[in-house]
Image (tube, rainbow, N blue to C red):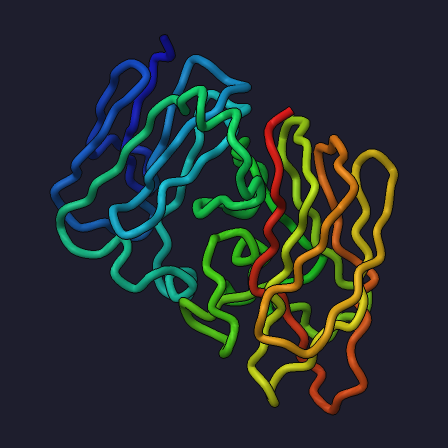
Length: 263
């Protein structure tokens, strides 16, 4: 059995609330969060799959942990506007952590989704990063592309957060799975806030096995679905993004979904 803990710490590292247990634990924190607060998820069993709910107003995250401690910083201010506005608010908070079940580990799923992804190297996968994020604003961060929210007919605050490329022609996004996965389908929700937005007519997908796929898109609010020859990979990269011949300089990605199974 995995020994696990959930600990809420303040900016100075002082413990505000803590629970421990095996395989499945939950914490109810009664009090308001303060800037600098962070939730620390601990386990003595790494290289394993977990299901974590970091807030009662957010979906559970199915994740692969490679570190003994995952630290999630509570967002405030500008960092908060890319989240559901009711999340992390009030004076009662519900946080859970459990080992994933065998059926969850073997099922066909969107392998890219991680509602609690963060910048840096948290040791929690899937994880996404990019070489540009528009003005460094949270509503245009790369993590928005795997948060599970597919509303794409506007831009800015939740639920219209997206990955923004700041008009950069060499923009690229890298999605890491942290372990081998077998995938055969990719879905791209491009942002469709027309006429504010442009759109991409072509992109290149590069995979960790060295293969590449060039995909073509059109002006649409609907998802672009691509069947890919089944392959085992640990990461993929979206790059060589070619804009349409349109006056707007603002293409963006609302969501990337990668379907398959753990290897």
